Length: 257
Length: 359
Image (cartoon, rainbow over all chains, first blue to last red; front, side):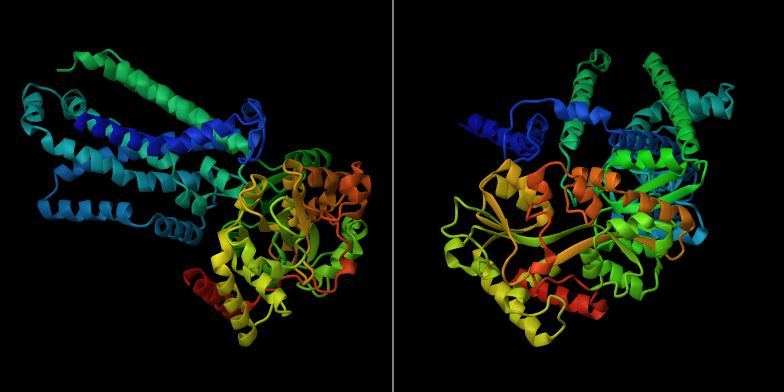
């Protein structure tokens, strides 16, 4: 009885999580443009998707910005964490507080203030401003995931490496970095996803003619969202799903203790 | 573990270099054309991309194309000056607001023969509501707001706004979820202007909307289309531009312009005051007014075109003479266009709309 209840509960959770995505995938295979009518099975939206230059350009922009911004933010964030461990307690907590505020702040506030900043500095809006903004809001997430790892670190290993004649840089990359790596990777992934699905900040800081997927979809509101977007979303979902399955199946998981 | 790390590094390094090079080439490709550039700010999905390509090819002017989703989100972007746009395509009331604030530049019709000759006189006439001397705006798309009903779900033909208050259609009515469109219905029903700022008239409209609320299935924006096609509601308030498409999907649907009169909306090209490429902007707008180009855009957008020459070229007779796409404006004397009400007027409307929604 208890087991059955558990299964039903899990089933409900999964249903609520995935029913919307399921609907989207079904609609992406609908020959009719409207969601209200099933016009027969068709892959024409997938074909149209790959012929639609604007959507593809938006996709490339999105991935590019996500990748670059998360890489840069990971570097800056990691360096910031290293610096913070060397700080006095008070300075450290003040700095932590400062980096935490942008995360708690509403996106729209961040977006508008960045836009005003760029205008007052006379920076031309374009790909560069989106990238700068994404790096900015990504850094706190990286710090958030690297910092706990940093605290677990045993400082003696680094000192031991120095005692044994290693240079500072060498000791960092050979001893400290491998220990930090899980934190850095999860920070990178977090930053990547945050950048990938950001809409509001991009909306305010994007330049003319530059669109990411989220801003592109939003402009379609007046005329109704085109089914090509369903197709694209389905493809992204399937890609992520296969990636996750592959990662979870990969053999090196068993090697871990 | 170590081997794994190295793999990780290599792949990150490769990805980084790839994306940097892609980024740089991406920047390089946004160079100007042989004859300069023009920056256009238009609604999303509101132009056939092919026409932009043709314009670039024929004139050597590079088009930088940007899209907005509502008049309200367009305005602050243009006003902030973060990007110096040349051309925008706002709706009627937003154009009057931009004229009031001195943001537009006067049109020189001598440089734009297509705009002068191809756009029908009645549309310029209608534009005078928001642009009194036709000095600033060249109509691009237009339409009416009307009632779409499913003839299998109603007992008699729907011809008047008043029928949206008929209790037998309780839970079968879809209203527009936007202040001006909702109030327009009530104001027209009361025989008032849709641009009124008279408090008694507005209160009457508000009370009417509150009275209607229990009968309304939902206040929606673009779901009217899908809900009506699917037969989820019997009567809906909709833009004429969507009507032809919905009828194609569901032949039971009928579109009418209510007897009490309604809103005629016009989205028009305007050239901004501080446009850096004014000459190219004139060329672009004039190109869009060319009959064959306007026809391509009509086929793509499916909203009524004010371009008479383009309408002549439509092959499908049922569309060319469609009462929905091209109603004869001179037959009606109670059609109006929205005008900007000023900041106080806007907040008054919003306040009253909030009262309706919260009731």
